[in-house]
Length: 220
Length: 220
DNA sequence: GCTAAAACATGCGTACGCGCAAAATTGCGT
DNA sequence: ACGCAATTTTGCGCGTACGCATGTTTTAGC
Image 1 (spheres, rainbow over the protein chains, first blue to last red):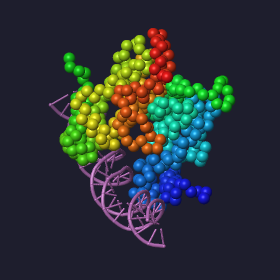
Image 2 (image 1 turned 180 degrees about the horizontal axis):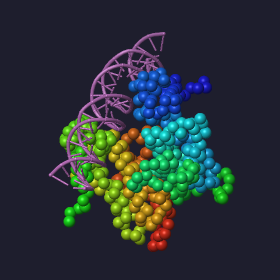
Image 3 (image 1 turned 90 degrees about the vertical axis):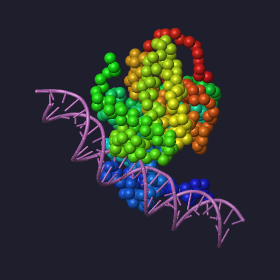
Image 4 (image 1 turned 30 degrees about the vertical axis):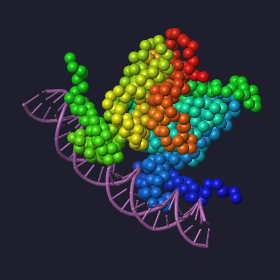
């Protein structure tokens, strides 16, 4: 009675998804992203090509998913894990920067590959825009009842800023008319710079109920 | 005394693009969005199917483009056109709301159709996220030298907020686990509500605006 | 334990997205 | 006016995305 809840069916689904992620990443690393067809990935994962598209709607998604995986929920968790005293903006920015700038895993070479392929870059950057859901939840929880729409908006904006930072960092080219210009800088610095314009909005949205909990409410 | 000389070549390009937009919208309205193939649109516009994809990278884009067209530049123009005294947040919010909530044209039925099709809804909402470029330019110009990255970030966030507002407005369904919940409201109100959390960030980013400062605090 | 319902995997067929290279069109110099 | 260079259009082909129908597995109900 230990591993009950997920149900056998759901576990198989997750296993298949995992297998596809792993296979996609491995093949992409071995043969280069452009030389991998979905049929190859499906075959390596032991499923039919059609099944692949039941899990990922594009070839790049599977490869990138192997790196991003559950980053969204990790960020949300990191936000709620911050001590209650720190300002909301600091909590959010630190959490996002921490989760994005720490490849940690063996994903280093994977990130290198993603950097090299425009299609993968775009998909990778797009994942940053998808952290809205869990983060919004975390915002509501942390502020003790922030306006729901405001939380959604701010979470989505954080994702947008992170996405911009990633794009800037990954670009180094294609800065044509109206494009971004400034690069040069480490990813943590760049991401902080991209997120800092949002700090006033985050702090301004937190005043709903300044309930103080365990320790002192004042910080720094 | 006519307009500039974009060159005959460029005019033909715009004409082709226009023809594709019009044809796509007309066919979609007549036969329903799902019953229109790109070949049909291309044929109606008098070009080859391959040429279609030189102008639009998806079937939905052409249909939606007939409605959105040059909304991005109109918003940017509206921002710069606001008198210099008003706060940046008011200028931006008013401009965005004004441009998004005025279908004006005969696009009313088109919007109705877009509302009905999930694929079109997504593409339509995505256009909101694409107003970043011109708007960032307008922000820099209006504030007289805002940080470039900050301008990009804030412009993109305005687009994100507008996109969220549109999605909420267009949804009325599919609010499953973690999704948005409360809707019910006119689009202008909804969009103002979605944009207001960003007001502090916008005002904080305006460096030197020694003008009137009213105590209006729309943020509770 | 058996049966019905639901969910999933798979094959097939259609349409789409786009890279590539040849053909057509336009811009410009002389 | 002519021809060359740049740009655009077009046909072709490959790989992808997905709806639909079917067989198979899992869950639910009795």
